[in-house]
Length: 356
Ligand SMILES: *Cc1c(COP(=O)(O)O)cnc(C)c1O
Image 1 (tube, rainbow, N blue to C red):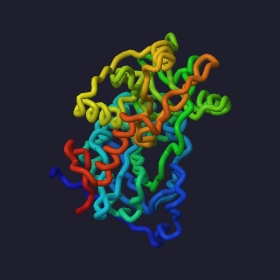
Image 2: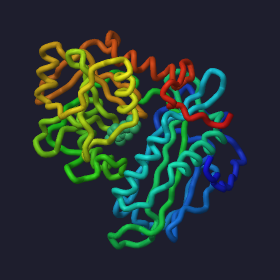
Image 3: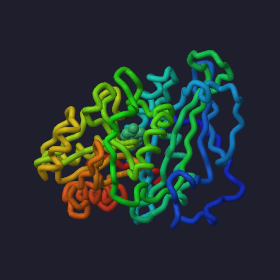
Image 4: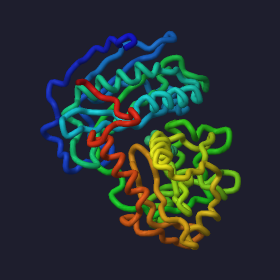
């Protein structure tokens, strides 16, 4: 182990655990008792602390609010039948945290510090990790600029924080997706690959319009031609065509998902043919019409594996094979659940154990 952080811990006087309904957990509305916070100033991270979850006073001039120097991560912790708790591949999120930081001119955080902050917080609130199938503790690390200054230049001070909260399944049903050919989420040379707050604010209007048209989500296409598939709102997208797993290759407009890497690693291990490449909308529509696409799903930490049941494009609605009958994505989901809940051997070393 490298240096342990000196984290000051102030525990809550009254836990909210007993009054929390674990059978009713809408995503992102329930928070555990504690949160982590650290400050960056004079070129270094300091004041590592865990304190009761609650409001923090902020100056209204902070540049995060005005210019969007802010980004986040999303990770999940799982409870095994024997009570042990594991966090799924948090080192990958720690690396991506720093890619986002670099793109937004924000300070990096040592991956070891990232891991330790999360593990200490989750261990303290370990009774908040649900044990039920498809339930987990969602972990939300984030960083934002705190200089009270309206100049459009990088802040010199920042806060790094971590919130956690128990969650159930993100999507409770199979998805009806619209292929978006008007709006864009990200452009070449932009920062779509970063989990930057601004990427999500800008996506809300197109998402809302898709919802009003009766869709659950949209598939983004490239901003130049709207002819190539990029990803889902907060998930990467994969198709099985003629038995080959195809997914768009990552680029600066596409977030490089940990779940995407996880599924590709499993598929490779099962000797499934994989193609990471540009995928045109025309190819997908033709593939559905010809019955060559047998599986389609989103992959992300929040969504896990989200089956796509229908795809809308140019006013037409295309129906895909019955999700319940799909072999590949259901095998991935079962394999992942067995691994995450500690029911099968962790052959890839993906479970980061918390406490003892
Ligand atoms: C978070 C996110 C994903 C999924 O990434 P994971 O690391 O698998 O959770 C995909 N696309 C976007 C835009 C995202 O924000």
